[in-house]
Structures are given as C-alpha cells and as structure tokens.
Image (cartoon, rainbow, N blue to C red; front, top):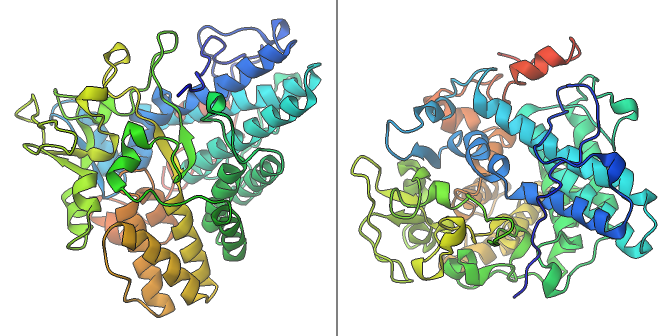
Length: 474
C-alpha cells in the first residue's frame, strides 16, 4: 500500500517578521517570497503541515508531558533516574519556565503557522481549482486540531485567521469561547469541502468524516450536546465501524481501517524518517525508551473479563500474540508498558528506529460512539446512549451496561471512555471537562482553579509586551 510521505524540506515557510511569541522559526526554512507559485508548491506546503502531526513536539515528550502523565492512567516510566524532570507533570509542580510547557506551546504555534501559510498563500496560486479548495480545507481542519490542543492546555490564545498583516504577531489572548467558535468555523468550512475518502496514494489526508468527528468532540467540550449529537450522527451515518479485533486495531495491519476517523501516517521512508511516538514508549532497552507507562490505577479500572486490559497493558515476561517475548533490558525500569504502540519485531523497520511505522490514532470510531452516547444522555435520550455504549462494550466482550438513569449512564460513559481510550491522551482533558479532575488527580497534587490549565510560557509572556495575562495560580 502506497502512503503519502510528508515533505519536510519546507518545514516552516516562515515569512520575515519580528521575533514574537508565535514566530518560532524552523531550520531549513524556505522564504515565502521564493515559494507559493506552483501547484507543486501548494502540495509541499500542505504536506509540511501533516509532517508536524508526527513530530517530536506533537507525539513525543512535550505532548506526552501535558496530555499523558498529568492523567491517572499514565506515569513517567523508564528508569527512575532517567528524565526525572517529567515527574513535575505527574505531581503538578511544573512552572512557567518548564521546557515541556514551552515546547508544546512552540510546537503548536509552528503548526498553526504552517496551516496559515497554506490558507493565505495557496488561494493566490494559478492551479487546479478543485485541488486548491481541498488543500485549503485540509489546512483549516488541521489548524482547528492545533487550536483545539492549545485551548485545552492553555485556555484562550490569540486567533490568527491567516498570516497577520505586516507580520505583526503581537496581539492579546482571545477568550476560550472565541477560540472554540473559531475552531467550529474552521471545521465546518473544512467538512463542506473535504472528500469522504481518498485513493490509496493519498491515504492519511484528512477527510469529511475526520472534520465532522473532530467537530463533534469540540462541541462536547463546549457542552453543546445537541450539536455534538448531530455531528457525531453524521459521522456514524458515513459507514465507519468498530474493528472487531481490538489487538488488530493497533497493529500496523489495522492502519486506516474501518475505525479510523483521523489517523496520522507515520510510515518510515529513507527521505523523511519515521516517528518516535512508539519508540519513546517501547519496552525499556528492548524496543525503546520505556517512558509513559500504565499506572496501577489504570489496571484497576478495568472490569473483570474486559479483553482491553491485556491488550492495553504490555507486561514483563509475557509473549505477545505476535510471538515476541517481552523482556526489558533495564532492571530498574517498571514492568508494564503501552501495548497500543507495540510494533512486532517481525514488522519493525530499523531504518528509522523502533516502531517508526506505528501510526497515531487521533480519533477513532469508538470515540465517536462514546461522544454520541454522552451527548444523547445529556439530552435525555437514554436509549441512544445505551445502544452506543453497548457497541463499545460488546467489542470488549463485556455484557451490556446495567446503567439506566441519566446519572448512572453519565458515570458509565465516562468510565467507558477511560478504559477504551486509555493511554491515547484523552484522560487528563476528559477529567477537566467533566469536573472530575480534583477527585482523581487531587492526590497527585492537582489544585482546583489552577491546574485545569497550564501556564503560558515565561518567554511568551515576556515577548507579548504586556498584552498577555497569565493563567490563574501561576
């Protein structure tokens, strides 16, 4: 199967402007004055947005700090003395000067800038009109995803709808509500243009289903349950389905399957390398670095008989269904790892490092079903909620839910999200949006009124010339 390789040669395409908080320049940049003249330029610039999805900032350490170990399903892992600074995220002692806080911020703004380069410049190119419109729609969906990341972690941030006039990036933060409305606008516009499917050569590009699926999730965060329900129903009607085999779902053979709504292509190539998403989480000194490992709390969260437990947690001494004996190479490391990122030895491409072929599943159909169930339940439609939570439970070989009241179903759906989406970077933001963070994360150091958001990085505060107000508690 041929896959779309993501061009890295024009990583940023940054214009010349002041060294402001969003103007983070990448090495190997191409000046915009010498670019955006041909259809090929438009394709390369769009591919440069996709390349960020599998970057270190979006899938490696910074992303795993802010979305991973802050939850109660993931802990630092690895050797206790290795990268001990990650513990600051586990116990909520990170500060405005922390490298992870800054690294995630910088990365997301680099990605927003790449999207804005396409949105601003591609419409000016004399090229195939249908392709032009599609590329702009792809950029808008991806920009919406990056802004969704920013608003969930930092709260309200400045909105840049395209490249700012004169390269002036100095502006105050918009409110979180304004950012969410901007995301909705981007996703709505993208969904109206994007195709539902692509040919095999373009597999990995964002689709109409991806835009509507992400839109349903955004509406859930906005607590606009009717729109979350409507958007998720549109996705359900498109023909997606659960992979009947939970293990197959996360192996390379399950990539871009019937459950894939928004998935990052991480295939390895000689020109562009792969991704370190699986490597940083792989079994310590056997397959990878051994970071971001399952917690005992996660293990305890699974019901008896739930097949997802042993297909989510990879254990020292076990033999995988694919025949690998799990044996760590560091006696001081833990004994559990994330099985969802495991790549069998027989399929590993060492040319790009362990697990570089492992795709990142950003949005699965199981998530859509649970979004639909949660929205339906909040609207009082318990029958629809029960139907969709049971679809997810049936795949896990569990009996139907016994919950029947709105309150009981709410708790059941939140629990189902925890075990179904375990270690997929949903747990921390789910706890915050549902108001459960203090209950589950309080023992780790979470403080209500502060730790729902991360601080704006110190250098961004300083470079804003006083236009930024810091988040409470920092």
